[in-house]
Image (cartoon, rainbow, N blue to C red; front, side, top):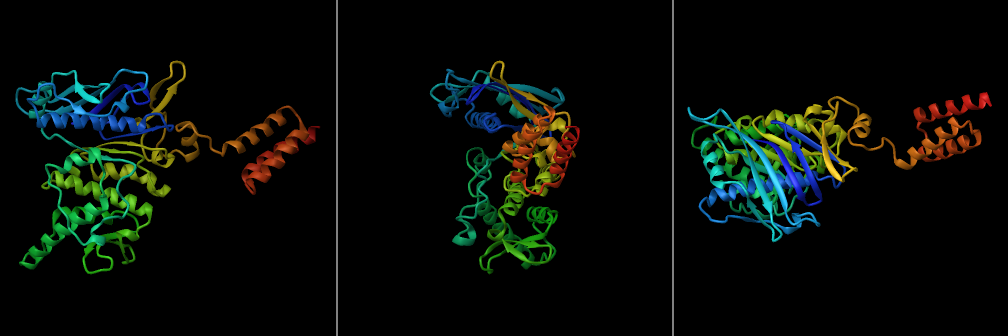
Length: 422
């Protein structure tokens, strides 16, 4: 299954918006308050509703309890329309089917459907593999707290029937869950090796080991219960093991995001490889805590490793955009004429400079706005042939930006030319 488009009406701060999605990855950008996170939340609401109804198919008047705060302040209700497509099986069915789920959020927070829900259930029977949804919010649970290394308690390994629902509503502690999962499978692997299968390697752990080895500066990962502190240790390229708590915030965000996605997907489908497991993955601010070098790599890395997944992510980073084709980017902008939001596709993003993307796509100024104002005042004085005003503006610019040779060289040359004509 793939999400094709989403229509939102009176949802939170959005009066009306429609956005289309690419089958592999869609990167959503826009100013704060444009509704990027609301789009991801709306997709999660639609998925949760469908999943909950499939568990109780014969419930009359079925609804899911949501929040009345999802309704725009001056509206009576909110409407969500999710268009989706999926492959079907069987000689009498079309190879690809497209349909739309229409939901209404009422003023008491109840979420119900205007559709014939029985149709959804019949469709579910012919979908070859209904993908799971993984939602990585801004607070992804990548902080190091209540982990195995501190508690020494394995806790409960999530049940595979319950576990897929959790990412919709909470992120939990990704590091703690990753450690518990790894320790359990690592112990099973060790027992099989001890019992005579000397070359046995757990396929799920091997997938994560190979994944970590692809990351710059790291070569492998292992669980060590006797180290201090015990738990997952990531091995640097020089052979130095670093406990997960010792990773920098950026390293933790990058490595744990990839490793946790691999873990979750393999819980969903233990018998498949990472590039075969379908899922829909939502990531809010995909660049969170990452160095600019990793920001430009994160989306290509995700789509290369998890090839059967559909990614829908948000970002404020020009580096992220520089690694993505413009056809996969959606820019949310406000239409001031009717105070609605429109979605556009930029002309070019991949390989573009940060300055180009900041101004041309993200709508931000290259420089700090007060400095930009000073330069604009200087240029205006030059155009008016006002030498004293231009000199005063240049002096102020020099005090503010210091030794910015390239910028000051151009400005000084303009002032020198004006003085020579005076």
